[in-house]
Length: 415
Image (cartoon, rainbow, N blue to C red):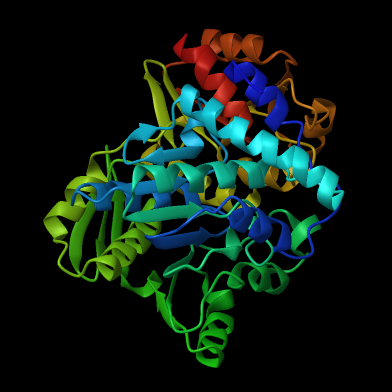
């Protein structure tokens, strides 16, 4: 049994699945055995990028009409507690300890009975569902961990499904083509229920055909998003109505439009004025976050080629006359070569660095993918210090490549 939060984390992070997941029977069994009840609506979100910001937009909008909104997201930027929220309240350390003691007892019995282990992500999901039950929520916004079809969140009976977009990431698990990856994402769609997406033109027909075949009400927002521009907000029109969001990035117009559709499906009486207020009154760490204005330092958790291309477009729009110095690292299982190739379109020079992570890349590999000036500084703190020391008046610093990386960089910079 656990008495401290550090004991909990040491246990949770060491619970790893014993074999590749081929069905959802384990999470279903645990849900039933623990007598968890769901008496609320569920909005389920999959997608290569934009899941988190879309989820936060929905939470913000529905909270503003006095709904108790459960939010389940991953990964976290600052602390584990971010994964499980009700409205603007994170689950507390004492609550994590409480639910972890229940789950520990159950998991130990499960190991003996089934010769299997409930892994970290599933334990975290079960903790969230137990917490939501005790908090008496009205609606849960649940973000997929990986893919969709065999993601452990997909056992839930969802009311609204969202697939933000489909790009190249997690190919070892989901497939090497967009079609194969899309098949996994589409696994969260439910017969007779709405599916909202901003999927690209390349997959438009696939989504249309799948929805017709399965009696799914498909809502694709792309053609109704217009007039996007950036200043201190992301401004856009959706269905000819003007909105703005405090999160910067051209792609945020599409994420926010998905959230608008989802919240209006949940409550058709919600007003555009209230939606606009909720969208424009939020700051989310690590998503095109300006952590310093002198010098300008931007943190962005882009960690795949689709996200990197979107980041590149936003940087060009917002800082057309600035030179971009990039502090970069990525995890070894990511396509960091393609990410660097994309960043080369905006990079003035690089500071390649590393972090203390079992999946950290060999930074010597990074130099093989660019012809721009670069420095190799293995210690992250030193890389940040040197980039700030050397910055010139017409330059800005962009820190990107990994959510884990920018989380650590953010702590160092703000400290």
